[in-house]
Structure formats: C-alpha cells, structure tokens
Amino acid sequence: MALPAQRSGVLARKLGMTRVFSEEGRHIPVTVLALDGCQVVGHRTNEDRTVTTKKGGQVTRNDGYKALVLGSGDKKAKRTPKAQREQFAAAGVVPKLKVVEFRVKEETVLPDLGSAVRADHFVPGQKVDVAGVTIGKGY
Image 1 (cartoon, rainbow, N blue to C red):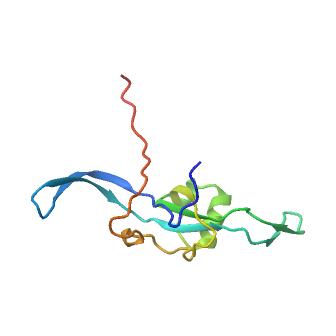
Image 2 (image 1 turned 30 degrees about the horizontal axis):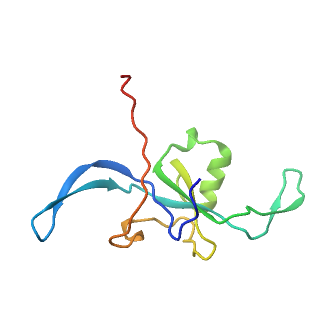
Image 3 (image 1 turned 60 degrees about the vertical axis):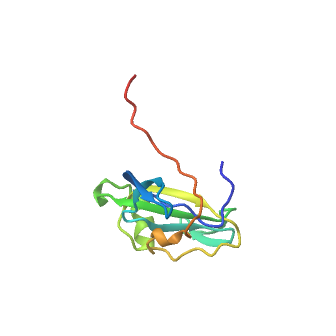
C-alpha cells in the first residue's frame, strides 16, 4: 500500500510517446497523457458524520483516514449500480467509468466535490508514480 501523499494522483489515459528537445539540443522522451473528465467524486475523512440507516435510525460513522476519490470517463447511468448513481448524484457529476481512491496526508486541503482535476494540479518538475494496465498478448 502506498504511503499518504501531499497531492493526490490523477486518472489519465496514455495517448503515446513523443520527445522534447532541451536547450542543449538533446532529446528527452516524454509520455503524452489525456486527462479526460477527471473529477472529484468523494472524500474520505476522519471526521464523524451522522448517517441514516435503512430502518430510519441515526448512526455515527467515521472513515478512519483521509482520502480523495476521483472518477474518470463517462458511463451510462442505466449501467451503473443504484448505490453508485446516488454517490455520483450527491457529488453533482455524471456516472464515471473508473473510480479510484487516493490517500493523502491529514493536513492536505481537499478540493470541492464535482471539481475537475487538470494538469495544473501538479507543479513543474514534480516526480510522479505511474501505474498502468497492459493488454496481455498471450505469449
């Protein structure tokens, strides 16, 4: 499990590779990513909150950690489970195809629900960890 970070990650789709030339004329290989519709879907916090149960009772719940839930890519509402549709409606976003949770440090300020996460979320020169899914070729 990854340690909590100061900034959360983002959900992106790889478009391909290209190169950028430095001032000395050397080329630097870079990966081109598309941030298509990456939005904040939810928050996980240490704060206590009151939740209404199915029978109408009130219960106090706590997530126990601080995290940011991001969603990317649109999905048809009729193909989304009802529980997720309600979560997306509460955040004010359309249902998302991919939903991922990123743990962050306690002192991190979380962005508002429904806000878009763009490339300016990162600072220039910042190192990032990247995870991907490969398509098996059967060899």
